[in-house]
Each structure stands twice: as structure tokens, then as C-alpha cells.
Image (cartoon, rainbow, N blue to C red; front, side, top):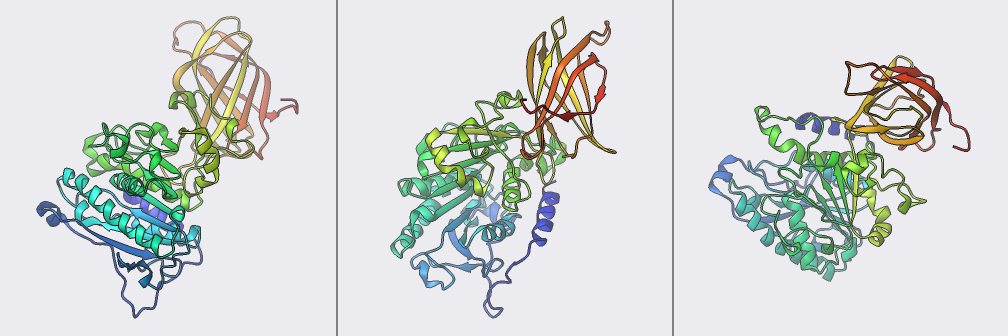
Length: 457
């Protein structure tokens, strides 16, 4: 699963134009430290290397001097600088995503991209040693950033992107610099050894002027809770679609959910995902359709995941800590087609049930089951649902719907819908679809052609 996702992302990158070929061939590249299991068994002593990439050398790293950053001609201190900080490396191998993340970051704007290579220190079968090394690596990186500042760089133009254990390392750097770093992005911050940590002992909102966090594995290797100015929770922040559910799947069972945070961030950088986060108190409220309008963010839309969330920085800082939820598919481009569904029922008797909806576009269709709980249908009551589909079919020519009642042995009661309305959430340019006065039987599909909603609706 992980390698398939990575290959797909590489394929998307190859479609992009304007990729540089690096510096002159006469100058050798400085590569990420690639270790093996032997190093992990014996243990590694901390050694931090800083590898610079820019638009002119997106494939060829240049190792920077810790004491004199500006001695490297390619390092322009007037540009913004993004630091990429990996996490625990139990096998010593280089992260499979590191090169792609560097290249995609270089495409966003003209900036310095620095890979913080602390593989010697992170590569160790003893996780506790790697955790202890984060503080030492943070002091090393802090000193480098102070040297940058002394040579003319601005702290508010520094962006630290930390993965797993690297997210806490980034937080330590930010704390060392009194929260004056411009931004920290935490991709599924590590949970083990940090679940009971104080704010001073882990990533927290005070570590930078703006902190955004993505959660994908809170029930295992990731950290539960909220730790940024905005925390995104993909599929609730724990189990991810498409990831193995049993230990018999081998390594993927342990790392798939945790590493999904990186792949979602990569996809957002490539502008192929556009994953919208809906601010909400809880995942259950989000699934119930209670948080789909983003009133606090008007006239702007809901905040998106990824590099561009900085557009919402001022609003988010004014709101305090914000939780945002979204759902994804199992594979690229991860984005679901989401609709707000409003139903006005007239049935005489109170009924409880789950809802199944199928959308048709000619021969193609997509379907969803809204069955995370039973919904209440009673006379003259509006029921709001969030319907999320793995595929986006457009234009919608027919809709099939079924209200499934638990009792399948007794008589089928009729349910009358005075109105059903489907509002595309991610495609505001598309019209809302309606249908009026539909009679349906419990546990039976009813199919209808949707119509444009009346203007006053």
C-alpha cells in the first residue's frame, strides 16, 4: 500500500513541468544518510546534517555549514526557508518520501528547502534513545537558525515541517526560539513517550506564530488530542481507509495509518487533492452534518489541508485552537465528493434508520452508506445528513435512495419525503438538486430524477 501510494505520487510529479536538473554536473550531490539494520542494532550517535535544495537544485542537495550558513552560494537568506524534519528510523533507511517532498515544496514558491538529516541518532532499535536525541538535535538546529538570523534571515519566514518524532523536534526548536518561528507543521506527531507529556515536552501552539497539525494514527503511533492552532483529523484521526486491519499484513499494518499523514500532505502540495477541513467539535458531529457551513470563515471557504492553510492564519489565530475534520478515499487523489442532504419527512409514525444513496451519471454511479448511527425520521421534521462519495459523478442524472430499518421481518411502512435537497459542498458553482413529495417504503430503493432547487431554497 505505502509503496503503491508513493509510486502514484511520483507519477503525478513527473507530469509537472519546469523541474530543474540541479547544479553543474561537476559538483557532487550531498545525499541523505542511508544506514542499514546493522547500524540500528549497534546504535548510532547523533550527528545532524543540513542539506539545501532550491528551485535551481531540486534534486541535488548541498550540505550547509552550521556556523556559516551563507557560505553556500545557493542559500539565499532573503528567501523563506522550509525545514523538513524526519522522525524515528527503526531500519536506518532513508524515508521513501523525502525527495518528492523536497521537490514539491520547491514548486510552491521561491524558497530554501533544508532537509534536517538526523538519521544518525534517529536510527536505533531503542526508540527511547531516539526520543532522547530529539532534544539534542533541536539545540543543534536552533543554533543554526540563530546563525541564519544573525546573517540576515527573518524568523517569521522560517517554516518547520516535522514528521512523527520530527514534529516534536520542531516544537523544541520553536520553544528554544520563544515561539518566534513563523510556522510549524506537525504530520502525525509521535504518540509513544508523549501521551502524558506537558506542553513544554511536546509540540504545542506556543512553539511558533502558527502551528498546524495533521492526525492520522492517534490510536497507535500518533499523538491524541489537539496540539496546534488548527488540528486536522483525517477520517477521525485514527484508522485510515485502505490500511490493513490485521497484523498478518506485516510492516504495513504498523506504519500505514501513521505514514498516511505524509502522503496526504504530499498530495495537497501537488494540488491534486484539495482536502477541505470542516471545523467541528468532534468527528461524530462532523459525520452528523452539523459542521458544514464554516460561518466563522466567511466570505472565505473552509480551510484546506496543507501548505496553503496559511491563508486562514489570521482567522484561525483569532479563533484559538480549532479542530477540523475531513474524510478521504483509500487511494489517490483521496478526495471524496461531499453533499449536504436535507430531508423533510411527513410520515405519521416515528421511524429510525440508516440511509443509502446512489448517484448516477449515465452508466456510471457512486454510492454511500450513511450508517454510523440510526437517524430519526418523524412528521414535519428536517433531517440533515453528510453524504460522502468515493467518486464525483457529474452531472447527476438520477438518484436512488433507501432508508434501511432494522426490522426486516415486519410490515413495510411508507415514508413520505416532502422534500429532499442535495447541496454539493466542494463544488459551490454547481446547483443544489431537489425533489419534492416522494413516497418510499422502508428497506426499498426509490429512484428519481433530481431537479434544480427553487430559487428561494
